[in-house]
Amino acid sequence: MLSSLARWSLCSHVCHCHFKPRSFSSSSSSSSSSSSFHFSPWSGLQAWRRSPLNENRDWGPNGPEPQLFSTLSAADDEHDARIGEASSLAELGSLVLSTSDPLIKSRLSHLAYSRWRRENLPLGQFTPPTRPARPEQPKLVSPKDIPDPKKSGLPLNAYLLHNLAHVELNAIDLAWDTVVRFSPFSEILGEGFFADFAHVADDESRHFCWCSQRLAELGFKYGDMPAHNLLWRECERSSDNVAARLAVIPLVQEARGLDAGPRLVQKLVGFGDNRTSKIVARIADEEVAHVAVGVYWFVDVCRKLDSPPDSTFKDLLKEYNVELKGPFNFSARDEAGIPRDWYDPSSSGSLDKRETNDQKKQLRAVRERLASIIDLEGENCELTR
Ligand SMILES: [Fe+2]
View 1 (cartoon, rainbow, N blue to C red):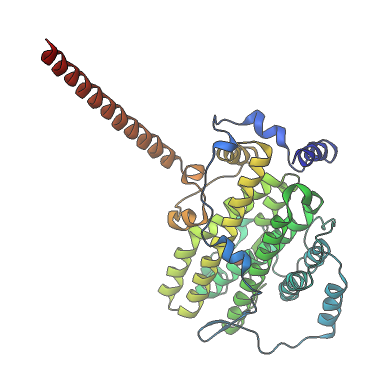
View 2 (spheres, protein in one colour; view 1 turned 30 degrees about the vertical axis):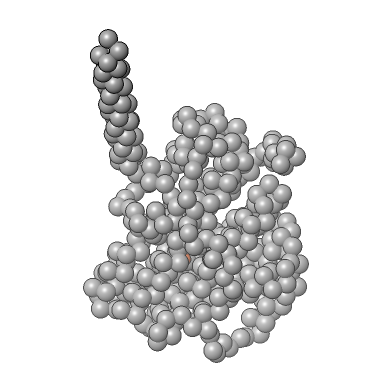
């Protein structure tokens, strides 16, 4: 461990700091240390990690099911061959990031993860592309230029689904970028870090498949309306700092998905599209794992840096100018293991109040005990007189 930490410091000094350990401790505002921090990881984490490859990439009449038919073009064969020739997980991830066609990217993401799992390939090291390859459509615009549903030319269900498809496509790239970009630091981060984020990329690729399939059923496709590039911008900004990447992407961006999921489902039910609502509900449910993985590794990185996770998280959000906006889906966030006082200022107040009440109770108990001892002493004095 000592040698890892030494190399960590060396890396942070030499290569423009992928971890920035000192910046945390200097700006840290909490008095608690990383060793005194306790959190409960998501109860399903180990089962998710051990789960077999998920081939349910179609959405059948009753939910997810394996793809029965897939027609592959010569171009698909060429992409598949490149996946077959890659010699490490980092190289596989880089191939996915360099693929622009969304459906091919999604398919390759699954092929890459499957090949790595089945053949037990090494992690390796690779330099990811600066930006992931993207299709010509959708046009990427400023968020204020995204048309509202009535002006988008799409019915509300397709509009919502298109937005979700865009999030899922970004999520594939975000997860693979985390695998590839931080691959030179496997000795410090541990192989499990990369296994988890490759698994996330595979889940996201399945989500994109379901969204694309449903869009096609509704007569639309991904690219039929503009989208924004905010999600990737956050990823780019955290490229030199693994703790920031974990704070900004899984703990903020993906956690927002947990907040939005039930509202989206309700809108789709209100619109009368139960099939899409079921797809969205399933996706929202599966996102808990991705936030949970983020919390797990964020805490792990903080422990290695000996930085308190709670204040480190808050300091990073300030440093990267990331805003936390409610309303929060507390139950899903609790399930994923994000402590409430990290994102909800009112809960730390209530925590303080709870602590104060507990302290008052303890003081009252001590006073009562002292009073009974004094009474007892008094009675003893009376008896011995
Ligand atoms: Fe997803």
